[in-house]
Amino acid sequence: MAVTINDFNVKEKMQWCPGCGNFGLMGALKGALADLEKNLHEVVIVSGIGCSGKAPHYVNTYGFEGLHGRPVPVASGIKMANPRLTVIAEGGDGDGYQEGVQHFIHVMRRNHDITYIVHNNQIYGLTTGQASPTTLMGAKTKTTPFGNIEVPFNPILSAIDGGATYVARGFAGDAEHLKELIKGAVQHKGFSLVDIFQPCVTFNKLNTYEWFRERVYKMEEANHNASDKKAAREKAEEDMASDYNMVPIGLFYKEDRSTYEGQLPQVKDKPLVDKDMDVVLTKAYEEFM
Ligand code: SF4
Ligand code: MG
Image (cartoon, rainbow, N blue to C red):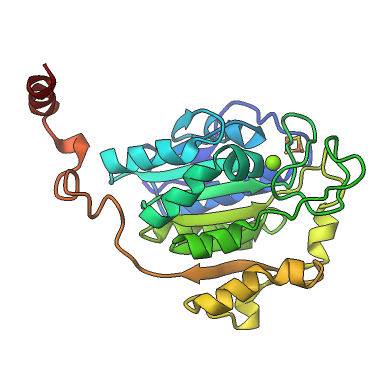
């Protein structure tokens, strides 16, 4: 029997603040998995720490909540061990673009076949409102009481230049559009980034639902060519270049390239999960005894 979106729900009550963008985001993710007819046991969701870190607890699939900023290396390892699984890493802008930014950079050039969903609320939410790498200049937060003086990190531009092969940005306030972006990411064979504007209604009073609704537009309605890297870079810089009057969402860039686990000699023909572990360990013991 085909799975439905309700099959991905759990009994546990989601403990996010009322109105948080994480609700729309999570609905889009579950809808995408249901539309793709994924069975519950075929999906693994891995998170780091932060409000986004609760994600694996709220989806009825396999899950793992790891260290701060480290969902991506865990997800990569899972995919190498068992490529039959659909592996989704989830983190926040602080978790992934600050604590774990080194993993973000290196996973992209390797092109592991995983989907990385970033709950980008432009603030540290769980720790109650400090500036994050994507906080806009001038924004007043607990750590920037006179206004943020740092240029925000641009995850989209970094992903396009870093070797990611599917680069998209969605808005939690448009769950239907976001669902389609996540479906595309899961179906894509290679590293997919879906950076998601996820309003933090409690601690980010600047980037609200209204703020985004006045500014975002869909690139697919503006004839953007996602196979054109130069055009993708221009779109990635459009928000800041337009002083945030034009904020594109949708698919920025997509290309086909061999995956890491598809080339790694030790696993490309037979994944770890299908190997006789006794034989592998015996050889290792002999070598290092
Ligand atoms: Fe959502 Fe912000 Fe509350 Fe975290 S602190 S649950 S991001 S509204
Ligand atoms: Mg955050």
